Image (cartoon, rainbow, N blue to C red; front, top):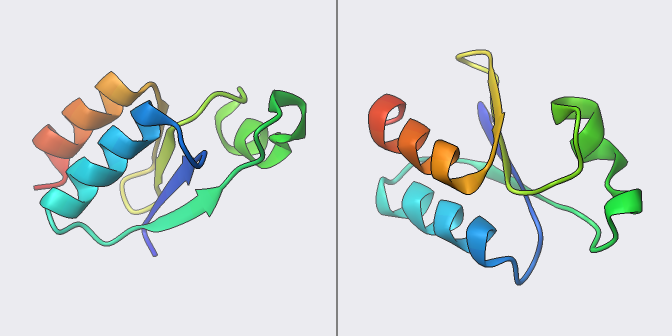
Length: 79
């Protein structure tokens, strides 16, 4: 899958990104992360930080954090 979303269950910012991807009909894979920041080593490995959501688009070589930026990316680049 070209798009992976690192997300935390119950995170409202993550839900906004999930909703936007679903609304646009974009196929993606979700990697669910641990609640404790110190346990989010996979997120840190791909993005350099432990916050979520993080979107990775391997087809376009894009990795980004912050829901507002991700939502803009979905709107501009993935439609």
